[in-house]
Length: 79
Image 1: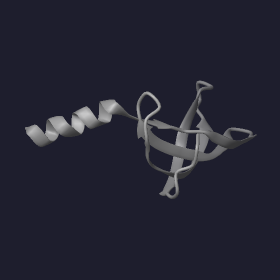
Image 2: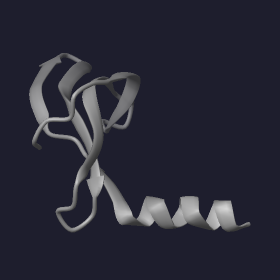
Image 3: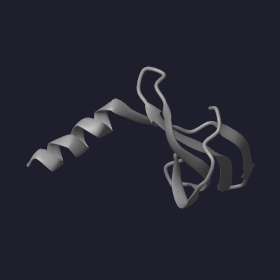
Image 4: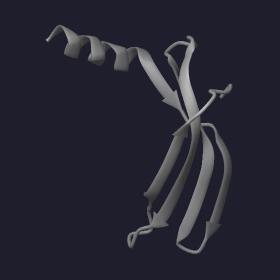
């Protein structure tokens, strides 16, 4: 139970931000390329990061949803 509580507490103290570098839309498909950075909340130390690619697909109701996702670990940069 102690380990589980520690994991839950860590999740609350950390945040992941997604600075976006590029978005392109073509019909009902769009892609988003960016960076992800995991850090302590309240401007704390960076703990990890990397790049990501999200492919979005327009749904029948007109809303966008992530259809495919690829990410990797890499050097964390400044968001």
